[in-house]
Image (cartoon, rainbow, N blue to C red; front, side, top):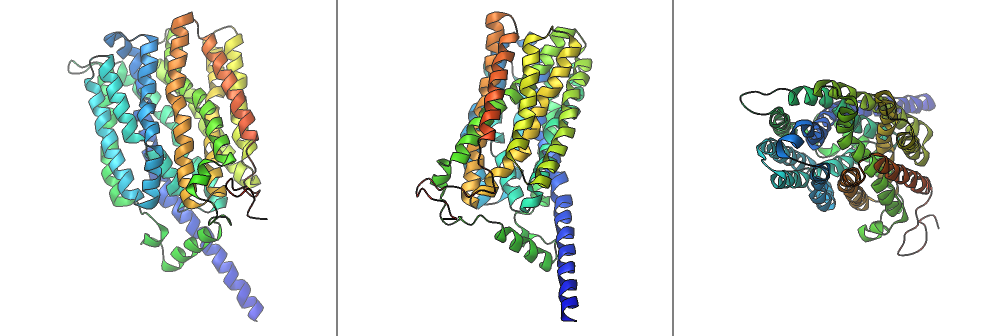
Length: 444
């Protein structure tokens, strides 16, 4: 009798756990997903604005590459403070404020008249957006248990490829139209800044900082989530400090691997529209539709990769495989005859490199304590995002210098291969992590 009762209680608890996890996902992920779509559209819309803006403002490829990349100079500087602020203060308040500021700055970018003003606008936008991504990664760790973390990351980061699927055709259409005496690229910045401002207000009203504050969960559900998250904290939480996290082999490997991966991802994001336009001679609108195709495939691959990583409890190879596919495609872009069809086919594989992101970002929270993981997320994204400046600028510089894209693609190929090698070298999350200061593992 008591055995049956105990079994029934365990079954009820398991059912409640599944229901609670699903309820949290439905409550948070769609909203965060929309925020990240808007975030990425506002960050990368300069790629489509360049189709007309470069001519209007007299920008060379080198100048455009610098303008695209300078966003990441200020973006990098505020990564760690932003992630820690969200961890230690309030995700709801921080995310709301970030949205309001970056939306306003995006709209002001429509007023630029020369390269220097564009540099300033992009620099300020980078500072405004800096804390958003690492902050949300930390925020997800407040709500999602380990077995759901890569899937949750995939659902959130699917906004990256979908922002191009949605944003590319829209941007191509807007850039091709002039209204009220304003060029289409100016309307692009003006119109695409408005959603961030509106969503900034909505975020303040909608988000909840911690499970303990969630009035939309029952007391029993809140207790269950908090207890489960406490149980999953690494056993070495007390021994690992923030300073040690900055010297962790895991963090250093992820920083370097992500730098090389981001070099590939951001270079492709900012230069794909221009390359397609020059190669095909298609209209801006048609380039927008073609530019969406690689990211539609990337979205599908990202969902499968996150699901398969959680199913097999494996991170390293699931992070490395998409970048290896990108390396093969980049080698093809370097060596194959240049046609519109072959370029699009190769870029489809290059853009699937984005599907490494949710798997890679599941690693820090599974191996480090809360404060160390927050710092690690900010550090990894900060170091990696330097490539957001270096990649587009180096690619534009090499094209200006040589008159061909092949050298840029060759450099991207080398960086992709380096990223794969470093990701494979990352210790398995299930293995005990050596604490640098003491030189032993918690298991010992």
